[in-house]
Length: 117
Image 1: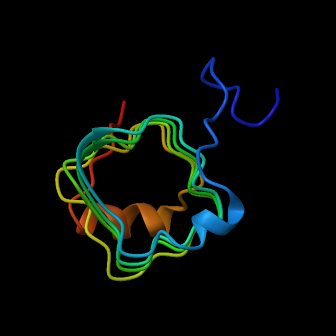
Image 2: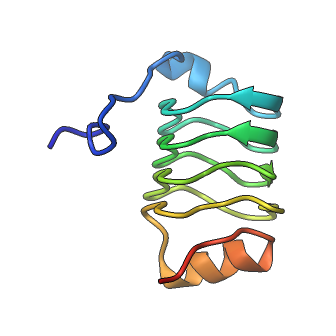
């Protein structure tokens, strides 16, 4: 299955590679950004508050210092993303991929939620 097709709809590419490198410090609040391609984006210090980021691709993204507060990160992809000094307060990551057991602990310690069956 082609990348981005697992969820029935392809990723939305709204940023060029060059634009993705200029997203550091981005602040988004109360918005829907589902299935956005953030792969390899510079999101250092970004803040997402009450944002739906369902099935977004953060693969290879620089997420150091990024804050996710009460966000929907279900089915998001994080393969090879860079993390440090993050917040995931009240955010849900059910079905998120690219998350090692160590990263899962890190996210949970910072307020992220996963569903266990």
